[in-house]
Image 1 (cartoon, helix red, strand yellow):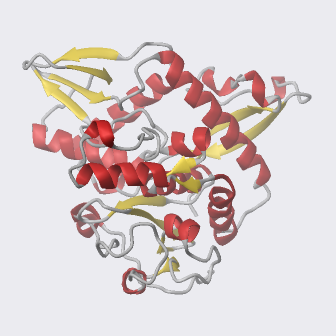
Image 2: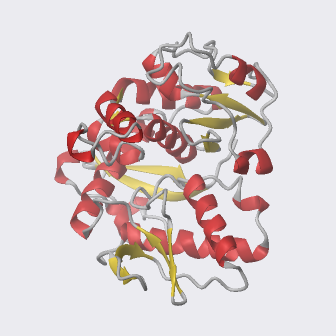
Length: 342
């Protein structure tokens, strides 16, 4: 089990105050002894990202990844407004970061940005599609639409931190991989619903319906904000939330996209082995138990269970669990259908 206990969150019991003392000094652990026990709960937690892909990068790629992590962390907890970058074509982008690419090519920079976004669900403000601004020797992350002010980002951050602290407090006595994973997906089951309105919007848009005629689109549905703020997500939001919860609780988890990017799910490391799990299908037509056909299975069994008999909202269009190129290249291998404790 991954136990990188590097941060301490002080979760304010009076949640509505919006105060999160984790914002003060990320370089050092919060001094638990000075906290007022009447209104705070100190929780030692793990980093909110996976090191699985990072560990396979070259030294130059790791250097850039480290820059990205450091600058995103500073932006996440900082007070600076998003930075406006202008492209040679006259377009303006809201960005964060200012990276030194070192010896890497632009193609390699874009690849590291993709690795970073797949590994770090905490940084909800990053645009998962465009990702990088790379012009005139400038390299920065492009921010997702709607995250255009510090006030918005702080509001989302504080809500996420507060609810994360509450959840971690509720599971702090669990010290078993399988029980922690179960607690993560049950928490999602209890607090999220599939955003059918947004799915219908995406379906209409991809089928040529004029933009002004489509349903409203939830910009947060593909990330952890959709879960923690709205309780409404589509597959990307389910998978990123599952990855985030597992990682902060000490389990290594990856966000997995299908080859055509029409679906997302997770791989979770339990004890010493990796397993596939699809929280979206569990919530929209699956059986949220460890015995479900889409929970803790080898990839081959998991893929063979991907059929049109499911009640998933997107069934009948594609086989959704075909691995994309990155995971095919970098692993991990999911080869067991039964979780085996050491």
